Amino acid sequence: MTTPNGGAPTRRQLYEAKLKRRALLIAGGSSLAVFAAIVLLVPMAPGWAKVKKSFFNWDVFTKTFPKLLDAFLIDIAIFAWCAPLIAIVGLLVALARDVRSPALFPLRIIGAAYTDIFRGVPVILTVYLIGFGIPGLGLPRPYNSPYIWGSLALILTYSAYVAEIFRSGIDSVHKSQRAASESLGLSDRDTMWFVILPQAIRHVIPAQMNMFIALQKDVALLSFIGPVEIFRQAGVQKSLLANFTPYVGAALIFLAITVPATRYADYLMNKQNKARS
Amino acid sequence: MAMLSLQNVVKRFGDNTVCDGIDLDVEEGQMVCLIGASGAGKSTLLRCINLLEPIEDGAIYLGGEDISIPGLDPQPVRKRIGIVFQSYNLFPHMTALENAMLAPRRVYGQSREVLRPQIEELFDKFGLADRMHHYPDQLSGGQQQRVAIVRALAMKPDVMLFDEITAALDPQLVGEVLAVLHLLKASGMTMVLATHEMDFAREAADKVCFLKDGHIIEEGPPEVVFEAPTKAETREFLARVL
Image 1: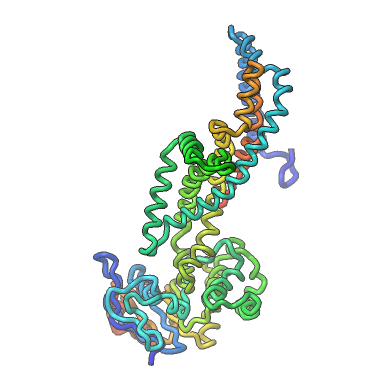
Image 2: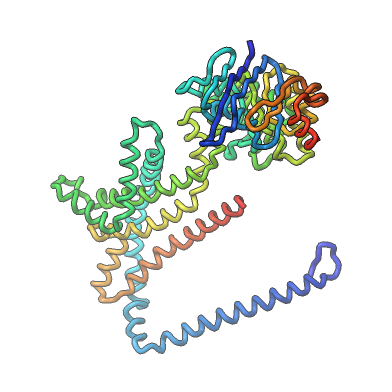
């Protein structure tokens, strides 16, 4: 053991090293016990053989996985065009809800009603209503595409949440920043744009990342109105092969994206909490 | 004609009268120090002059022009009156240089290229030449406060207000900020300070005003206010702080 002064470890260091060894040992032992119990006990369940065959079938997995990956590209594409639009619409709604000019008061009401409505309705309902309802007006191809109206449903729902997060970010900037900006003669607009917003956006990046992770998963809801994206493709394969393994494959693909993204968002959140305290 | 003139200024927060009929004249190039206990109304008075707080009654004149007319657009006034706060209030997402250039860029529409030499000169003058490209959290309190002064000066104001700008600083950093005030005074800037630095006020002020409960109890040259105060309240206050 090394010590800053290069000499023998102090009593305290010896004691702490002992505590650390013991903690590692206990944590390792208990984890091992839990996992061993799962691995040993679950196969003892009476239905395990059936479950294994219909959910964890390796042959089915290897056969369907490439198709699932292909279908996942559609999810990524839908996400890729929805995400930037959500960021923009969310920001505009947040700004609209904070306007002070009396002439723009209707904007505030509309903004408030919008966020209330779209946060209050289940996403799947919005997807159904917009995804089936609007093409039902008799729009010609390609304007009746479920891609367009499904995406719109996601954009409207998520923008409402994202707008509220932006608003909380705007509120989190200390009012002395506004005073400093105004005292320099900057207009309300410049104060918002150059002083408040850059700080507000920085404060809410981790929270917004969590919203976009949720969006990545909710893209699968569009499968209910048509697009053969990964969830739908897994359903098709399930029906063809009479086996549930494609759903497990789809879950793994989602996890491959969402777990690293969630970890990264947590890392950003921790970093920010540390910086503030 | 006084550069800045306050006449019977009244400021209330609800039932609480913070400034209760304040009269004050500040001549061009003068340094006026407001002293008094916390809550005497010094900071509020400065915020009223800068139009950050509307006043209930009375009038404020800047260069003879009434700036306290209700409904007056505050922006043209604010660019002529700089204010520096106790808590610096630098913009944390910008470098020191960007902090100082933002307002003249946006309000006067000057380009970075035109501004930079002038602003660099200010940084240089206040001993911040090697700190221009630092962010506020990379600067000490004294450096941040000097940057805040540069930021206010960049608007080329007619009057500068200082709201207890050394109150949040470690004692060893107070000197570097006060040195900047001396430089400013030498350059002929008109200044109003709310301050607890009695030694500084005694040495540098042209006029000292003692405030208590929203009134100016006593005003005069520092020799008089500090050495031979005429009012009992002033003597009492000075006995406690000196």
